[in-house]
Amino acid sequence: MSGKREALILVGLVLAVDAIFVLLYFLAGIESAGDSAKVAFTVVWTVITLAVVIRGLRRIRSFRRTR
Image (cartoon, rainbow, N blue to C red; front, side, top):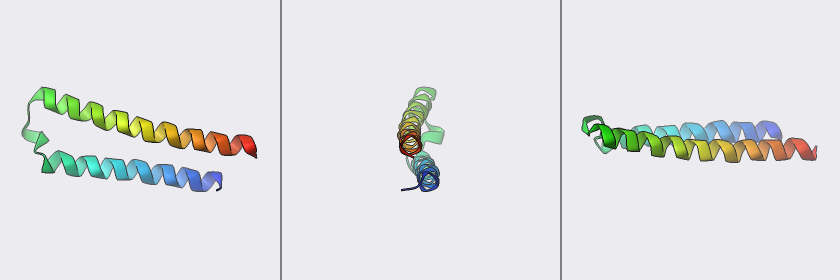
């Protein structure tokens, strides 16, 4: 795989995670939930996004090192 393709996959995965969490936000009724539920939801969303980004950046860095 090329580095450009890995970068596009990373962007696509981040967009997919965001789309899923926005959908969950409205379907689960988080907008009307208490503050602690909103904070917990945001923390989970951030951690999952961070995991996806770290994975993608590691793959891009690995590709660049092997070139």
